[in-house]
Image 1 (spheres, rainbow, N blue to C red):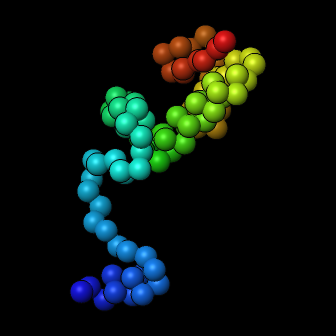
Image 2 (image 1 turned 30 degrees about the horizontal axis):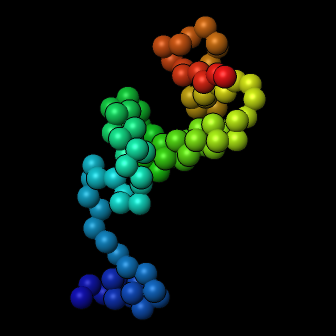
Length: 90
């Protein structure tokens, strides 16, 4: 057994191979579908995309009032630029 894997197992962890292009098995089927659809349009990691998907689901479940404007980077995009931003509204 690999010494690194043996050390990790001794600490209660395991080292598993990374398979490029595969999504983690704990992502639900709908999230995996969404991530596969947008993957070619973003450099955002699958984990961050999942966090975003979950935050949108939360906002929908909580029926948060108002409008949500998505941000790219750290600057909000102007409302008149739909090609660069997605907007969700009630």
